[in-house]
Image (cartoon, rainbow, N blue to C red; front, side, top):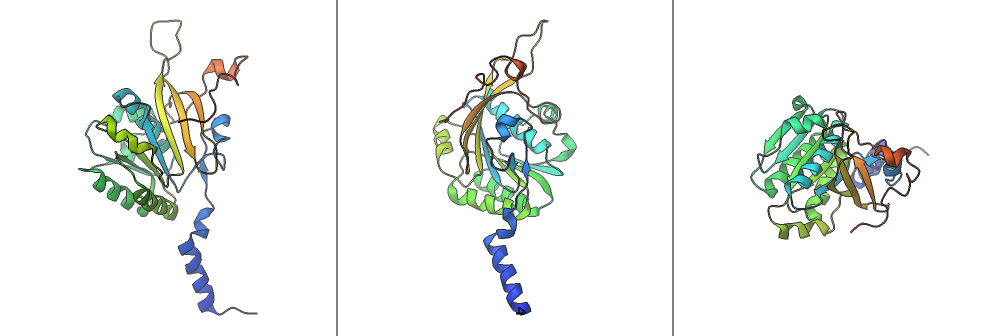
Length: 250
């Protein structure tokens, strides 16, 4: 039986509204088997919103969270929109995580409401590899809007949570529509045989992942291509598996 063109057109519109066509997503693998195995599809979903925060309210963990976001953005294609509320982002540090200055478009916004509006427009654009927004508060309604925009364009959205007061950090535990939620804390670097500082290390906590389980990982910080690495003693040591902290995270 031949379908009328009008019916086919209506079906296409319904699929577009329901998002069926968008649900075939690609992913951005970390290239570390233990992390990718925890993520449905084997990597960080593109066309989705992800939340990232520092393990504490301090500047050091906050900087680590920003570099983790930069590493993810580095491995996408195209320009990166980074929306900030404070002028303390250090571009040379982002470059060390592989995010070259000529790839980044910075937008300074006055408050969370403006940040979210800019991120939403960036995700709707469709020509950006990643959109990073520094926000203190992110509720279900706002995150749902960002998630839908990301799904529609295929761009990856990164909500980098930053708080001016410790009391604002409570908001990080509230439900959102983000596909994953990460927390990054700095840990001591490995001792070197010569004077100097080794590659930075992080405790990477996958606090929440849609259709997956939470887990903790000890990793070496992003290199110049935005990639994480497994510390040598964990990758090649006799207790490599036991060296990874696993299980539910708070």
